[in-house]
Image 1 (cartoon, rainbow, N blue to C red):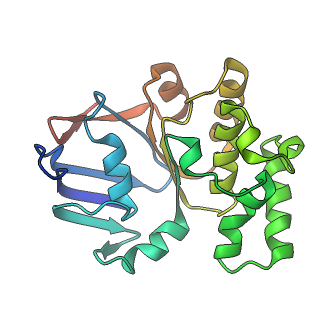
Image 2: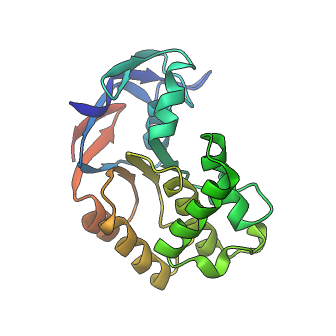
Length: 216
C-alpha cells in the first residue's frame, strides 16, 4: 500500500494555464523518491496538494489508505507527514529555536516537559544543541535550514516531504544534512535541483513534465 498516492491531479492558478494536468504519483513505505522537473513545473505545488495545503481542481489524494477530500481529512495527514518548506522563513516564527522546535509537539498535545525533552533529543541528534536558545531570526541561512528540519523531526513523522532542502547550505552543512537524512527511517519525497544530493538521498526519480509524471 502506498503511504501517499496522488491520482490524476489537475491544478491551475486563476487566470493561468494548468501546471498539473493529470499528474499521478505514489510513495511507498520506505521508498525514497526524487521529483524532478523544470522551474515552475509544479513540483512544490504537488507537495502542498499532498498535505491539503493547496486543493486540486480535480483528482484524488489518498494518504495511508484513506481518500482525503475535506480540510478535516488532512489533519491526520499533517500529523504523520512532515514538510520542509523551500524557504526556511516560512516555517520558523517563534522567538527562539527551542520554541520553534517545541511548537509542533505542543500542538500534538504533548506536555511542556515532553515537548522540551523532544527538543533536546532532536537537537542532540542533529548536533544543533548549541543553537537551542538562539534567537531564530538571527541565525544564518544554513542554520535556519537545519532548524526547520529539526522542527519537522520533532513531530515524529512517518513521511518526509523535502522541498529544496539544500537551499542556503554551505558545503559543511550540506554534508551534515546528507548524513542526517541517510540515517533516517522515513520514506522521503524529495524536490531538489542538485543531482549529486538527489543521488545520495533519493536516487529513484520521477519527472514532472507538461503537467504529468513521467519516468525520471
